[in-house]
Length: 132
Image 1 (cartoon, rainbow, N blue to C red):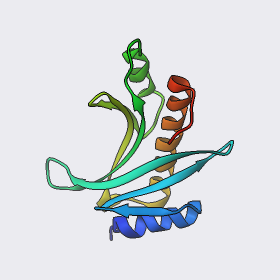
Image 2 (image 1 turned 120 degrees about the vertical axis):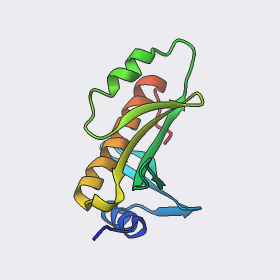
Image 3 (image 1 turned 90 degrees about the vertical axis):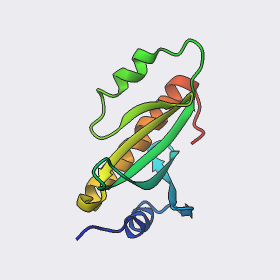
């Protein structure tokens, strides 16, 4: 039986000991990372092309800037298991998707941490900051 996103996100927030914010079906939590760092990750549900419900985990990195090497961003996609780097409307994001029907808490936790860690690493490398 699939886990509803609401329960899954509340369980993750409890496990990570972080607050969960829910606005217009967007679940947002601040994922704690090593070294007193953190990264904000949001989750939403959307249908795929066959109507299956997907959970999308998204973390913003920053705005594209002149001189940014697009090949560097593409190369990051080869270093992750679940997530990928995407550019949408001049903004850099780290995104991972999972079928809601088959979502398992441990796998979703690993995915969530990978999104947060990858976005944080990119923030630090590209912008020398920790804002999200």
